[in-house]
Image (cartoon, rainbow, N blue to C red):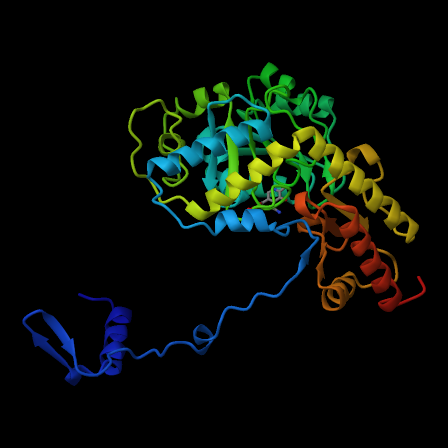
Length: 423
Ligand code: PMP
């Protein structure tokens, strides 16, 4: 017996379809008049409109013409040999950007969150212990992802802007004996770059794998996957790499591969199962690649171009360039009488600068004014830093003195126009 809700839906549909117009022919059903009852929406009959914006928030950043052009090339099949060649190039580009010789290096079909979930789902089995460092939104997200897949989640906590000493990390590892420890390298919600030296060694001392998020920091702040003993590292395409959002480089060490390919249970996600993805990326040593999902072909073209630009510039040049422009921005902000949220210069993320919300101002009004009058996107805080900070991101292609000066001029104008009180 059909449920009542289905029956009433069928009745409604029958009323809408002009059945008398449908007659059977030898080749099937012929409709004398349209059987379509929902008309084409008016918006779909208008051309696409996309305004120009200066994307000086924490991402996505503006995409340079060279990368847009690469993404606009005619697509080929996702399983064509030429596509596999391009994927092999991407793998090499990621190995350079991450400074790793890991074979298990690839790009996820999806945004940074896809790589985050892929790492947790493949490494951790339900019931296993995970330790997550939370000093902003990204730790919160990973803790929730791990909890949803049935891990025993333990957290190390600091308010936004705080960081963890190696002694604090070691104490928590000794106490909770996790299989995985998560740390965000570039905490974009707080504007903090976390010290990485020694963390990997401590994790390995406790037989724990180290998972690091570099979505906001890759290419902008020094990070050396192999030398710093990071087991799983991921990033996003839309920050300092300047590709459109939608692909996410990730790499797994030998140790990480050993854990994830010797599981007792299958990962909860079919799409993110590394046994399939490693085959799709030609990383499993098998002679044949078998269809798993259709990768974002245009996104991979764009990602390849963005990795090529980073390789041409050189990682060290990219790091020092981001620092130089960030220092120019920081000085300009202080000259405007603003306070930087991260006091210690060495802990400031060069790609995303956080400013303490100036007293006497409504931060939402400042942002709206700057968007309306200067076509510039800055953003407020995210998660636990909402209401604490304004964020300015100058990443990759957007990272230059002219843009920093434009950002400062817009902020100076907004500070003059939006003052609420003489606090
Ligand atoms: N980690 C960090 C540090 C980020 O800044 C972001 C994006 N703002 C993410 C993870 C999530 O990436 P995505 O939005 O591409 O899923």
